Image (cartoon, rainbow, N blue to C red; front, side, top):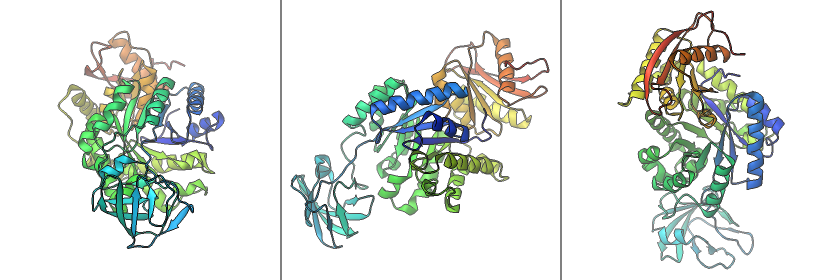
Length: 478
């Protein structure tokens, strides 16, 4: 089964979509990668879901990627004696280290790292920004604030700190246990929440040891400020617009989304656009016109993937949401303006052999109107460089390693096929032509372009480019 679009669809699975039957329906509707949200999934359920996805993968005969999304540090206030309190703008309100139930003048904040880090003038946003406080003074044990906006605070509401750099890593103790569990289960990608600095990625990478790729979720102003360094240490990025829109002005989020997408494209790192893309489809069978435009903007920008959250995890129309996203993306990519917009954002290649070969392959394929680019890749690096070029023709990534194919299922324009290593150059060409026919990308009489590393089976040695004619004697393998 081949997709008729280049952007990929990442679908979150949950109560509405966790059965094997529903997972297969979501894949058939267009889902390329499944996301497991560890905020709502215990280890037993996670392993069950991974097993079901792998069963569906075997049934459909296509590599399917799995992303485990770690919860990250959840900062919350304590409880109130009355469950909630009504505050007034301008009044004084204190967050402190006293575990007694809260009142209309104070509440317990069980996070000493916040008490010791917030400075006068810093903002504290409660309950996704519904209540805004501004610190007046802090002594390490309490933070005296002025209520700026909002009127209500209640038990266990979340705290966001857009102005404060907390001296804690992105991995909590729960995250470390979850990370060990998802790595043992064989997931392909791990998303790290609330990254603030490049150092936050180091611990996760050390634990993962290459068993899964690390995706940095950009949802804090501190991460935006250090984006180039974070891109350098991550394998992919997610524009997590939910928390980003809490900690930064809402009107700034669209511009930041474009900045992150273009920076990731320049670096050749996959980028996912997430949160509220088709939010109304949680309860409605069709999205709003504004949501359709939102998805289309991400596709026009050349994002690698667009993501569904509650729409596919807990909504009433999970299959319809995936199918709608598929239809939007397919339509955008056939729009007359699409190629021009994608080409205008293309970056200069880096001074490496893989980039030079990938650039040449794209230019030759587009000039000669070839059917497809076939790239042999063991580690996935050659596939990444080919996708960075955003060619007009499809990319077939052939890998002898199933895990590599699963990881590349997130990648723009890349159709992944697991295939044994070629024996020699003749076998490489024959195999590429045969698979191009098998997968519906070419027919006898077409030409394809092949990139690979010679000698064969040498990682990181992409140095060969060859145009091949798909002859009438080339027979499908099935």
